[in-house]
Length: 323
Image (cartoon, rainbow, N blue to C red):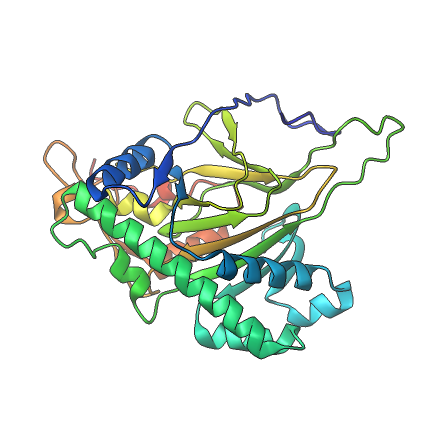
């Protein structure tokens, strides 16, 4: 259960509920149906039996904790890839420190040389993880396209596979909030990373065994997501909502801290190339469901994202005025 913070946020509903679970080892047609239903209703689901090795996951987690455990002066060497408390450039703050890098071989190699005494090993670990989650993201997107009846089943995944893809990898570290009250049994919960939706196509997220992630339903109720280090969690991003013409929903979510343990998450944000025009495939647009959004490039959307606060709704700026 999530308890009230010392400085409580506005009254809001917290509803424990199981999120959709996709067994990726199941029969493909059934997997596709579960994924599409989850994306329509939640914009979010959990993936088990995903095929990514425990070794690849463990090495990345070890590398992340190794970096965040360094003295601040050593972590600051990685600026601007490293940040602490500041989220973006528009004043948003959180109880989080992070490492953000482009999901490319060159970027991973550069950051590895900057922050590690064993850069070759770190590069291998991060590269293997990035490639694994990228492939998982592409497989999921192709299954989605099949179930949606899109003739070109690579229409979504091709944007991530593109050599100029703007995908990024982000490691978030949420230190525990120390409880200085006399009553040591009370838990202090603060916002680690505030409410937002992901602007990209799809997010593949994994965390250690510490809870904190919450997703929001359309009625404003928040669902705490039970951590499962053996699984991955998938978020529908804004671009995928546009490319499905609003059939899928871009999930709003946030991360909370606690008083007991640190939480670390690793998120792969699958994004298109900057020059890519974002538009729904023709099969997703019908007389009964006209196009909801005007065409725009990922560069335009990314610029709009960075011009706004974290929790602002961005998609409204790109709604089709003809409707």
